[in-house]
Image 1 (tube, rainbow, N blue to C red):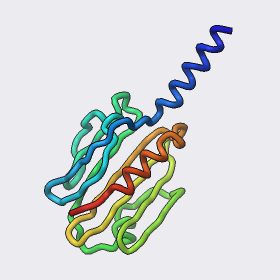
Image 2: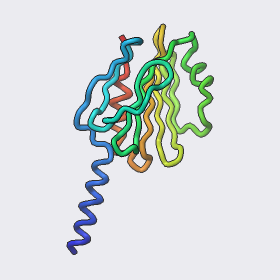
Image 3: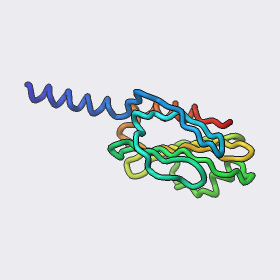
Image 4: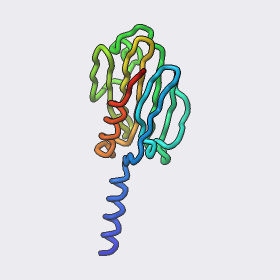
Length: 152
């Protein structure tokens, strides 16, 4: 009985710890004015630099990563920009407007989520990869990051 209780408690702790964002901070790319809220309690490690301007972050256990990126806008519409990136087939969610696009799908047990907002000079993007089996725990985090993406 004690063993069963211990297993249940351990599973609950692992499940609930999937994407707990206890502290958030603003991240800004000075060159482009891109700004976004980042759950610093989750994405606590720097993980390199993307193309253009910005920063890549990852969780301390490496199970998820976040890229905040800005690249010069070459006058392409969101649909044209996305098409030039040659996204993989089988996209589960796609929304394209005159000002932004959002695409998401699953690849190798991870959900990938990309949102890019378009301004006259830059394309401002967030790219997030996280475990598919933790989707429910990540939904609020991804939504907050996505909705906070902006530019000066």
